[in-house]
Length: 358
Image (tube, rainbow, N blue to C red; front, side, top):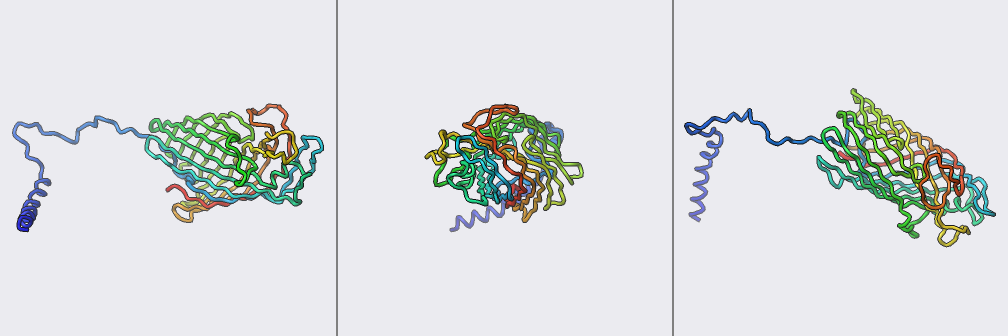
């Protein structure tokens, strides 16, 4: 006990002298050269890297839960087999849940990696219930609708303070399946893109690249142009990835943004005939679905990280045709479809709740 008291007494006696000694400059020995620290030159350069964002852009959505609704429209499927009905049907609504996750699993100044999951379901409600005599496409849409379950990986690699690369890979399982009757993974469809870009300043970045995509319904390879731009007054901007989407943005304040533009949604969907339920001689039908959505939107901050997103617009049908199998079909290819179907063009609405990046 006495030893501990002596040690504590010694500490409190010596501590003020130690602190005082740290505050006083060191005494230079006679003959030593004085060092001017203000003129020292850094031997290693701290490299600066371009970031993946610009000022004023739309919030980056990490988690999104939404609902999509298309109003009343018509479906006129073509007859592609003997004895098949080909009459016009009326769809009261096409609606479904949408879920998206895009999480940054690795985030450093010199590399950013986001992994994502997406799910979208569209259920079709007809004015008259389909029967075994109805067209196979109408039966498939009413029985199970269309579903997409996908995975994405997006990498942002800055090369320096101005130049960057973007890589994206996607895998989607699309079809008229249900979770109780899951579709085989051999029908997974793959997409990807690579972009080389320039970040001119904190208000503008752009890039050029190439993509492997199903946005037109069929497999295609297309050039892409990427740009994010905010005006000097930070009141408006543009966000685009052509040809997939274009968007004008109006920044009202920190909590409210208005948007206007268009976006292409599309993919190829397998139509299941495993048990010959449609009495057809083949089981490799794929629906080439592609639509152009003209829209206006409102983004509103409920809190710093919770945003509400509302969209309303017009859905224009680009393709709703049937093919056999999955193959490359470039624009202008006159290879006949198995069936060329006509789908009406309704109004649509989309509402989502989003957790955004701070």
